[in-house]
Amino acid sequence: MKLGVFDSGIGGLTVVKSLLEHQLFEEIIYYGDTARVPYGTKDKNTIIRYGIEAVEFFKNFELDLIIVACNTVSAYALDEMREASTCPIVGVVEAGVLACANFLHDKSSNILVLGTKATITSKSYTIGLKDKGFNYVEAKATGLFVPLVEEEIFKGPILDEVFQHYFKGINKTPDAVILGCTHFPLIEQALQAYFGSATKLIHSGDAIVEDLENKFNFSTQYKNPKLKFFASENPDALKFIARKWLSL
Image (cartoon, rainbow, N blue to C red; front, top):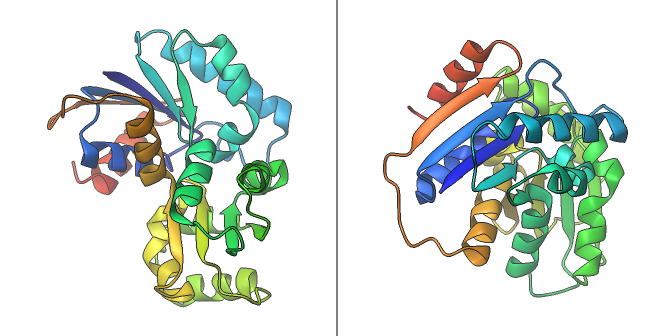
C-alpha cells in the first residue's frame, strides 16, 4: 500500500505519526503546502483550488490512497478532490465524526469541536454529528493554538491564558472534545489536564486509523515504511520538523 498524505503545512505530521504506529503502509508520501499556510483563514474557492492542485501533485506517484490530513480542506474540498483523483481519498473530518459517534453512545452527550475559523465556519463537524443524532454540539474557532504549536509552546502559562480566553464561557464539561486541526494533538496533554480525565479527546490521527481499518483489509504490517517529505516552500524545514516530531 502506497499512501499520500496532504496537509496545508506541518500539522498533518501528527496523522503520519498515528499511521506509523499502526504500520499500515509500505510507503508514505507527505506533501505540505507550506508556501500558502494557513488555510484556516482562506475562502472556500481558494481552499478547493489548493486541494485540487495537491491531487495533481500526487498523480506523479501512483498512489493507492490519499489522506487529506487538513481539517479545513476536508471540510471544503473533499468532493472536488475525489472527482479529480485517480485513487480513493479519505478526510479527517468524516473520520473524526465516526470516531466520536463510536465512542459516545448517549446521544445527549455534550461535544465540543475545536478548529480553525474556516473549519468551524463550514459546520462540517456539527452537521456530521447531528446527522448521527447528537444535538448538543458546540464549536469554537481556536486559531491561536496553531502559532503556539508552531512555536513549540505545548504547555505553560501562555497556553493556560489562551485556554481561559477560549473556554471561560463553557458551562458544562464536555463529554468529548474533537481536535479539529492536526496541530492540536501536540497540546493534547494540556487540553486533557484542563478538561479532566472524564473528557474524551478525539485525535485526527487515531480517528483516521480507526476509519481506515474499518474500510480496508490490512493484512500486512510494515515495520519500516519508506517516508518521503515534500513541501511547496522550504522542504528542509519540513523534514527537520518531521524528524523531530516523528522521532526519526
